[in-house]
Structure formats: C-alpha cells, structure tokens
Image (cartoon, rainbow, N blue to C red; front, side, top):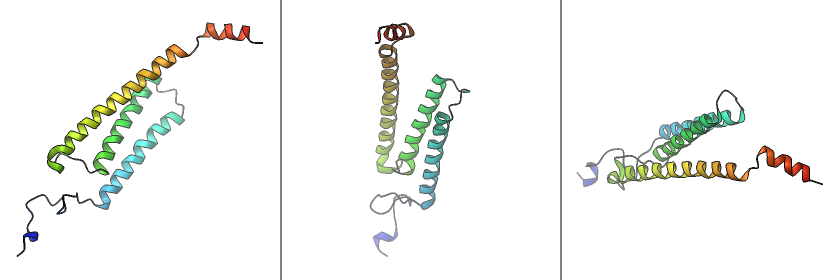
Length: 131
C-alpha cells in the first residue's frame, strides 16, 4: 500500500493543502452575496422614509461587513482549520481593517458635510449677490 492511500490531515484538503470545495459551497456563497447586495440596494433605491438616515447607514455598514466575511469564507476558503490557524488571524485582521475603513469613511464624510456645505443663511446671501 502506498503512502498516498492514507492521509493524516483532514479530508477537506487535497494533498497540496488546497481546500476541497464543492459546487454547493460556491453556490451558497453566490446566493448569500446576491442577497447581501440586493437588500441594501433595495433600501437605498427604494428611498424608504421608514428607516432613519443614521440607522440606514448602520444597516448598510452591517451588510457590507457580513458580505466581506461571506466572501472570505466561501470564495477565499478562509477558516480556523486551514493553514495552521493563520487564516483565522487574517480574518480577524481583515475585520479590524473593515471597521477602521468604514468608521473612518463615515467620519470624513460627516465632517466634509458639516464643514463644506453652506448653511441656509449662507445660501441666501449667495443668491442675493448673484448677478
């Protein structure tokens, strides 16, 4: 019997350490990605007044973060078992970066809106002085 007949590592991985992935897992990831894109798209394009703007931003951020995790798990095949746990560390690092980028972007947009947009009084003054 050859050495290739018995594997000491999980059956989830091929001999070269490449994860074995089925079409069902790819299809699951694709369906989740479509759903996680369609719901925020419908919320924004529907112009629903039922959801307050700050709450809508939080909802959109949550969907974005979940979608990043879905892509990492279903398409990049990152989990705690593969690569000796280094993929789990990469996942945590990615989540930290996503939080920093999302909160930083919101902070910058808020301050640009606050400091760059003229108020109602300034708009009236500009209209009065226009030729």
